[in-house]
Image (cartoon, rainbow, N blue to C red; front, side, top):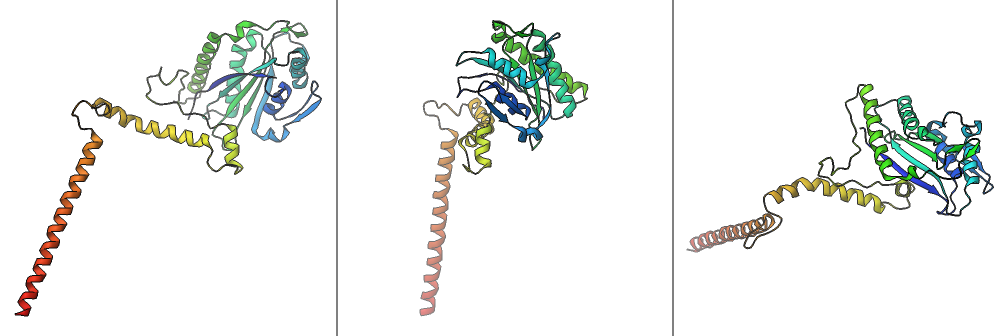
Amino acid sequence: MALYRLEAKIIGREKRGRSVVAAAAYRDGRKLFGEREGKTHDYSRRSKGVVESTILSPEGSPSWAGDPAKLWNSVEAGEKRADAQLAREFILAVPPELSASEQFQLAVAWSQKELIASGMVAEVSLHHTKTGKNPHVHILCTMRKLDGDKFSAKKPREWNDVGLLVTQRESWANAVNTALEKAGRPERVDHRSLKDQGIDRIPEPKIGVAAAAMKRRGVEADPERFQLVRYVKLLNDMRPHVRTLERLGQTRPKVGQVLWFERSRLFMARLRENVSSKVKDAWQSLIGTRQSRERDISR
């Protein structure tokens, strides 16, 4: 089932001195040496989950921009602040109805149009999980444009505009739907919120990598995140029934009004009284009949 997802976030040093070289190695499933920290980041064991990866850059970019190690080490070297923003990441859900090749080309074409055309350099990596249920793409983008053979002195502020992200979300939905239509598939996605779509449902929270790992490793049998997802699903299952009760005026009582659950309680109380009365009458009748027979026998 095709699902919509476009998540954008910033990768910075403020969280335990994170390295964009390490982030790139993880997303591409390779081994990269981080020159700034003097450390090798080896994620080659994850290579099975990485279907395909490539670096995209504007026309006329220096050759080193196509080398992952040189690209991301250059990004690290160009940022001096301890809390520097190193890269922007987009995480996109790609339709499982498409082939791996179609999924990757979809992400590449969208990146060329929305990111590279504006001056970003981006590494696009298609990931497939073991279950095959969550194909997705990681796009790691530079925060600066290339200026000749180096990065620009200033970061483009327009890349941080909220309106741009809104446009990108809609653009990705259109790209996915176009690809599905081209493949002859009936599925479609929508970038709008459930509320804007007129869907009366609470958005389900993501389980997340950490909670999934805890459950998989047996650290916690039922992590809180799994409980939360089940709770939200239960609320969504109950939602149509609650709406029906609201239409019937059964959720906000008026003076003297007996609500549906009170009616049920009264009904059960009366049922118990009737059953109890019937059983009592039957028992007394049985006892009376037995006493009458004993008197007849004694005569």
